[in-house]
Amino acid sequence: MASLTLDHPESLVPEARAVLSRMGPLAWAQDFYLAGSAALALYTGHRPVSDLDLMSNANRLTSPDRRDLLGELLALDSATEVETARDGYLSVRVGGAVGVRFFYYPYPLVHPFEDFAGLAVASAADLGLMKLGAIISRGTRRDFVDLYLLCRRLPLAELLPLAEDKFGHVRDFLLQALKGLADLSEIEGEPMPRLSVPLEWGEVEAWLRAQVRELGRAHVGLGT
Image (cartoon, rainbow, N blue to C red; front, top):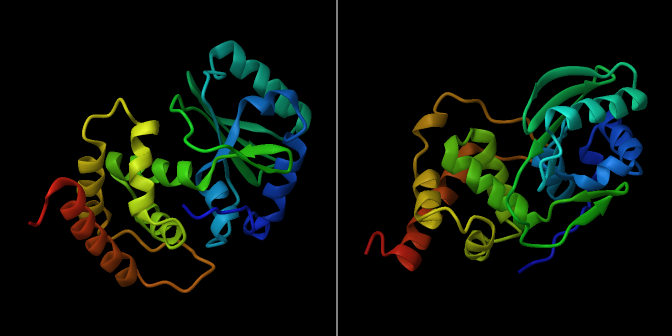
């Protein structure tokens, strides 16, 4: 499997980089890792990102934990505003410019973390599997585009076998993933995400069709 590194710090807008740099050294930050669009953009450089998704394998987002975390965030920036708070989830806006979302995400990691500004970053393989999980649930056009750009460097055929380690409790994950990749009806009418690289949706769609056909034949006997 190809090794991807965090080669694109410029993909984070300056305000987001500044927030990460201030969070990294803090004790509570060691319980979280960066995932989502910001982490993916650090690997691929495919689009500018201003919001941050931080995840924890342990539930550090109970009501008392959220209060403590919010106190730390207010100490970091007194302009921090709460947008949503519930068990396992906290969404805030720091300095009016950077959205930061905290998630309880109890699934294991399949590869070690990378490091950026003192904060753990999910591996490219873990990010790819998370994208597949999102597509199964109900993916957006952005999810399909993100997966395509990641799989230019990390082939889907190498990524899928790792799903057992991350989502072993999910029955028929491979079949669900292939169905999700094949069904584009839910994203009709959605715009293309803003990108830093030239890309037409037709290129993504052709890749999806080819992957479903090839992987379906190889793994579950579809199309034979």
